[in-house]
Each structure stands twice: as structure tokens, then as C-alpha cells.
Image (tube, rainbow, N blue to C red):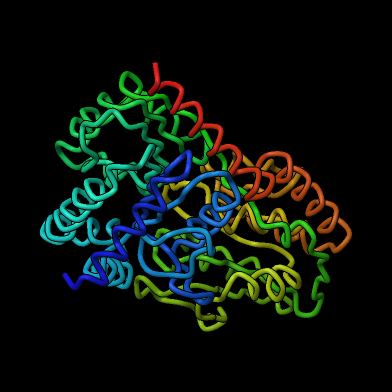
Length: 389
């Protein structure tokens, strides 16, 4: 390694060591730029945490970080993480079969072993996704794991649960799902080794401040999602019988699986956060999410509701935590119920009223990313107190 790089690395770690609470933040997803849809919530989490009184180092795919946050990946790790992100992430590799899962999974664990060793001066590890905790050494440092919906599929892999239990038993640990429906599963598997505590994500101020101007002719309905069979669910089938000539369905997001899309559906490539908020949320009559599998609560649902945009959602537990049927949104478990929701929200007055109820409820439940950062920071401080006992 050239002397200049070695000196720069030593200075980075020296700066890290000076501050009171030193946090190594680990994620395998992060947006490369404003147009990148991957890991937007991770970026917002990092921005919120950057305002707290902590020294934050982020090990993640390359992307724009706040000025006072340091990048923790080495040059080789940066390239590898970027390739992983382009390839769809670890969850996508697991879905592609055992060989891909083994190849990329072992590569991830080996690199994480090195980064945890390199940042042994960290006071606390904030890990996003359970698999990123597997390489944490037995050093009694506190761990906070942000658990996402895709994590639960990982638990079906033989040996993973026992390996994670061994890690958590060696540390003060909090497993922090962002919604309640995951808590029973996590407590059943890890309750003896770690505390399970919901920590909700936050929402940007701009969503709460938005004033909608609904387009009436044609009415615009949107689905902002990764394009897969499970994510789309029955939307195309139900929509064909429910939408009228004055309705348009716009689907916005990356195509992950090639699925048959009806000619009347208008597809758009992934949009940046500002465009989704200021163009689509502002004009639409509703956000539709009819995903046919359990998942963590999609951030786009929270952002839509914070914008005052009503949501029509499938009856999964994650959706029902925030979407209260006929109060701040609509739950549709059948084509008939979906058509009823479309008819109800086609009335502008009722639509605005339900949207304002949605905004009020999300402000109370989630607040802003500053509020979320405070929740995480409070958990950090509690874990540090436990470690000192």
C-alpha cells in the first residue's frame, strides 16, 4: 500500500477515535445518485444520524454521504459492494439459488470480517440486515440490527439462526424491525439472545408540507414498486375490471422480473425522490400496493400517506399497521373490494379528507427522519449503558 494511502487511513481512524460515541454503520444497499432507487431509506437514515452527536463511519455501496460522515470501505470493498448493488443485492442472489447465495454470501462475510477488525475502535455496530451481523467478532461491543422484511427469508437457510444466536449472545444487542409484524418471529428465534424492539423509519419534511392538486381527467393511479410478480400481485387483473376510461394506471420502478403487462398500463422507469413526491404524489388519486407476499412496510407507502395521498393496499399485516380501512386508506383483499376503493377515492372531496387523515396518522406514528434518528440514538445510548455494566 502506498505511504500516502496508509497515512490517510491512519488519519481517518484517528479522527474516528477522538469522538465520544463511535458508530460503524453497515449496509449492503445505498443509492449511487439521486436517480438510484436502491437503499433510499438507508441514505435518509444516515442523513438523520449525521445530525446526532456521534462519529459515523458508513460501510456500504458508494454514494453521496453527508459532509461529517466518513466512508469506511476500502477500494476493493467499494468495487465489490458496487457490483453487488448492480447485481440486485444479497437477497436477489439468495433467490437465484444456492450457488449464487454461497458465492456472494461468503464474499460478503469475509469482507465484513475484515471491516469489523479494521474498525475495532468502534463503540457500537449499527447493522442493516441480519446477514451483516454474522461476521461480528466476539468482542462484547453493542449491536443494533435494523431488521427488514427480506431478512425473514434468510432464516430459512440451514444454520443461519443458530449462527446469529451465537453472535447475539456475545453482545448487548437490539434487533430493531421497522414494523410490529416481524416482532413475534424475531422473538421466537432470538428472544433469549437479544432484545426485539420496533424502531420506525421517518419521513422527510417535504412530504408533510406538500399540497396536492388532484388531476381529475384522467384520474391518475400509481404503483411505485420493483416490478416482480409478487410485488404487482393481482393489480393488473383487478385493474382491468375496475378502471374506467377516465382512469390511468402508472407503474413506476425497476423491472426485476419480466412479467406480462397489459397494454393499458403506463410504465415508467424509476424516478428520483423529488419526482415521485412533486409530480406523481401531487397529481394522483391514490397509491396502490397489492403485493402478494409478506414484507417489511414499504417506505413509499409511508411517504405517500405523509403527502396526504390515500393508499389502497393488500391485507398484509405490514400494511394494516398504518392503513386503517375506510379511515386513512383502503384495504382490498378481493377484486370487488378493490373496485369499491377505486370508486370511493374517485370522489375528490372524500379523497382529500382521507388523505389528510393519512398524513395525520403517519406524522403521529413515524414523524420525521430526525425523529427516527433520535430513536436510534436513544437505543445506542441504552446499549452503551448495558455494555458498561
